[in-house]
Image (cartoon, rainbow, N blue to C red; front, side, top):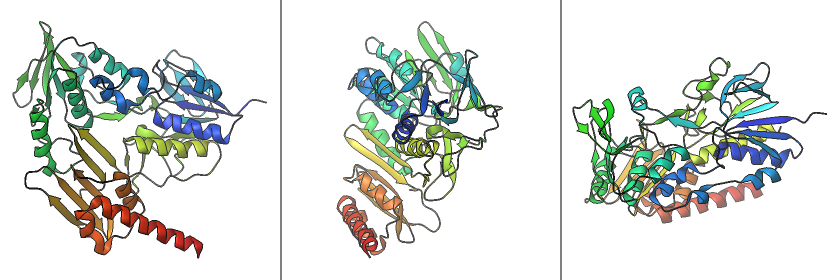
Length: 421
């Protein structure tokens, strides 16, 4: 009798999380994992540390051949999936070969968004290990321009500076780290980068011209500015890696639309991680959640349901942290606020510390912290569990770490008491 076969596309956090759950629940099922890369699975979040020289490449691997062998997993490496035949339950590889499945998980992650002219000029993104390797070979102190002032761009800039290069960041718009932090923090972060020898230029617009001449890149921007660096890195955003799904019949919006079991619109096909469009825990609205905790949790839920155990996905909460030059910036939940939100802000005059808390109906729904002592896990607990803060809002603003821990303890005690009754 043929074994039930699970096929997982992608060996990232979501795929590995699903694998562990499937194998935990179904020891006899066949599992195949497919990856377009040829190296072992690794943590993409650690790539800036490799670039900076703080970690070795072998230190960021999250699994090896022995693990896959022990788990009875067949691994297909260096192979891209070019299409999915959902009617016949088969995937089509780039070399034309086809592979059947009983259940399929799409955990292909995301890929850089690059302007066509940047691609033509062979300006790379920074997303996978293969993007990092050429930068490790830059000899001497090079003049490097980073395009984009999101998390990836700013982290890459810090890493390159630590590596001894001359670095500047050029952002198309006036905001930096735009989806993650209040505009209040922009000036403080830009100033801090400048003090560390990384100028950040904003409002230059998109790249209008790009080429290479006499060993230097020649860049012209919509705002009329020009740059001629030795090397350029494009960190201009990412999108779900889902173009291969054209014609598959699987519902796509921003990403692959999934239900509360991480199922797609196609029978026996699941999706998790950066590629999945799933509900926000606080608002119920569907969107992408391009963060590691979401990938791990979604992969776990998908794996359990693929193995036949009913497991619901509650939804994601935005969590972002940025540690640079001894400063920590953290954003949690819906920190932008709304008309019905109650917002509290505390900031130092010199801009060295900033706290913003957003409440709705006495419950914390979002927060921003900059250079403030706080336990992000505790604050996230308060948000996820909709803990009633009410009259303790000011206390939480003044002492977020101590008050947060106390409120979590009180909530846990109340929950324990209700279970015992």
